[in-house]
Image (spheres, helix red, strand yellow):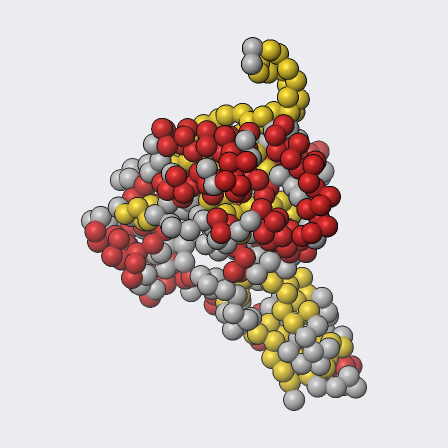
Length: 412
């Protein structure tokens, strides 16, 4: 009796994935719950465990193929004895799978026209703005028009359809024969494609602007050096800078809620909670796990949750719930040596704080030139919802909290 390996539920709003690496080949013995194949989604990489023990007799979905929820990935036969014989029948279904491949590629063409109606929220938003969903390029499954597609069409304006065809008209210039022999073409991972699309969409949609300030880190560094050993002994986690920055951010977000809000069509949604995303670089790309209700956590609570999420990100074990719902993002380019940058918004959020390298510089304090550990801060914000006064005030509040960390303890 054969057991089917199928695509599991991948999380909210995720309807398809790309087959990554098969950890086993046809004929190999597998144990129940042993990771057997890796799937790449728009947000995370998921390992699919073997549903039963036995022998892998067939691989239906090869690496690089796109599969939907519940799609058949392969089959496992019971027992280890028939590994040689079991692999033979696998060859027979293989040709049947080959003709099936063109079907998915042909399906999107008619589906984009009428077979897949626009999502209800997208249809309502389009009607409210006198836009026909047939004129909007759908990014959903089988070309379905989603709410984000309508928002993008509204932001682009009427000139967008004429400009859209121009993008493919600029093919890559061919390399010389000598250079081509030394180049390597690698398909972008699904995660990298999603990162690229989301960042470009953020630039195209939001009225993005960045304001800068600098913070004297001496008070935080002195406090950290004074209590880091006691802190680690009591809480079992190291005292870093992110706990201070997160609490400073949540204090400022309470005072300036527009920075914690988002635009939905012609509405502004104010979030009465602070789910702070932390940009984490991994070998597969940038991911942004979320510390939920960060405003309710202590500095120790923030450091513990950040440690858990960072480890999961590096191990590739982040769950979908760890990646969703962020209302504001912090990114720290300083760990790589960046002195100054302008971060790109993590849509649909309206604000992102960029931290940078701490560098000793001469500054004037009380009329005297002294050497202080200084850090540049950058706040990128959506000017459609956040005014310049609010953005500057937000960054000043973060600066004040860090230069006088007692304010965080006293909730000032």
